[in-house]
View 1 (spheres, rainbow, N blue to C red):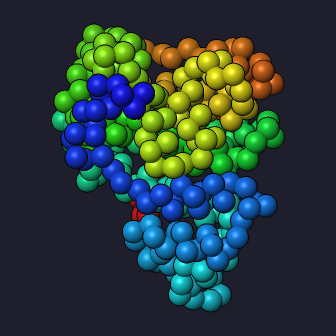
View 2 (cartoon, helix red, strand yellow):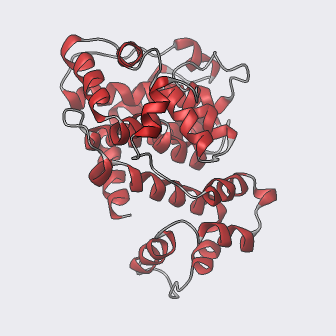
Length: 286
């Protein structure tokens, strides 16, 4: 993928987001509790611009704390590895998502951000119901599963607008529209490439790269299956936000493999709009 002409254009745009390699290394550590070494993790996360001040501000804003958070170490000790992982990814995601960085004119990144939150929520609920993987991890993965679209918005906004127009006005499926406009590439391939460039864990690369095609990955992990279903649920929510009448039909095979009932899926669908609004207000503060 690194030699694809679209990747070349992304690199030549000089707008590609830069994230310290230390972030990927620290995330690898946080994903594996046995590898969690607090002092080393603190040193790595301290290289992420603005993360320490943001964490301290958030925690001190919470009046229920019985002590003041003064340093990054205080925050990490208080929150623990799992919560730090979630906040760190949410923070990094916010650095490159909605308000300031997106440059597309027709594509609305704020609305699309709600789809990402919806995917995160649905992934969390499915993981909790099935017990097949870490629910908090699935929430954080949901936030960054479409990072390829973010990169297009920042680096190649005209291309993204063409894709969006083809999808919205001509009813072309967004993957098909991407392949037409991006010379055969898709946002999943671009996302997998950028995750590799940033040194993010292989597990995240696979989630980003295969959440639309869970059986293309020979591993076909539970995380990928859950993200596929969560993304499908949230895509239908997103289509309603856009005011279209289209529905994205998910694979019943995946639902059955996860041993989930249709009633459970319908319950997520019904609760998702209110949940997205609630979580969006929280993340906007970050």
